[in-house]
Image 1 (cartoon, rainbow, N blue to C red):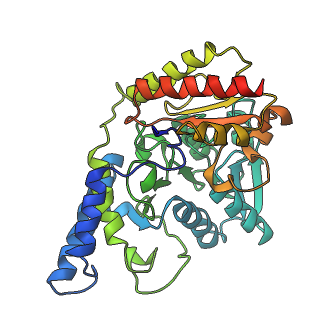
Image 2: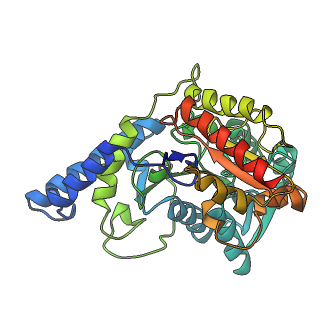
Length: 381
């Protein structure tokens, strides 16, 4: 049976070069980068090479890169690290109702500890109001965290405009953004948007699981969430995941180099638009929840009258893999907080699936997936 993988927002298939780099590191370059002997020096060389590579992609300094265990840890370290370190300046924080759970739960935990948190509302397509953002920033605001690309809808927030608003209203407010769904698919350079902290995950760009990155602008201090041997300049103690970091290098090498003239992955956009045109030919009610100007790789769609969970399993029987939304909450009975936040009716939420593309998908694969979808819908209606 064919395998058509269209759940690339949940995770991506590692590139063969990634697997090869990890295996070589596990078998040959298995030293601890803190060791002084040759094995340790080889491991340290991998660490430095990856740090330079990610810094080049972000147009930042290698010293501003912190390796973590993944996007969730990067988000936690940025948010809680700032809140604890700078609480003497103020105890007000700003975020949105449509963040990834790792961000949302971090703010809820801080709220329980006595911090004041403003959760900005979003419109029908997951966009926050920039006026609401401006009004939310006060002299007591020490951090604003706004997601770049929403992981369920693909909604893109304008980081440059947001950064300008935050810094004009309060220059001492730090700006963090979750770029886990945008990095690798579009131009992401924190200096362009006055971003102070930025989170990335390796397994969203055909790299390994278990490796993440936090960009921290030079001069900013963070309260470490775990202590130990002082690795990553003391911000993330614990022996670095050298096999994961080694695997990150070829994943980074395979990414396009985006520019202002070419700011996003046009091949992904072509695939998404082809899928949308195919949906229009299906003789069933289809509601597209993603905005037209959303990210090139995420498409959130609803089929009222059928459960999304039922539809994904029926498609799986055809070898087509999609999801109902965020992988972090896919096994929870709780309905998507993002879809509830944007005000979708429950019948529409129940019938929602998310299709997310990779540049390694093909038009032929999408045609097969669309035919399978049409076939399965006929069995339910």
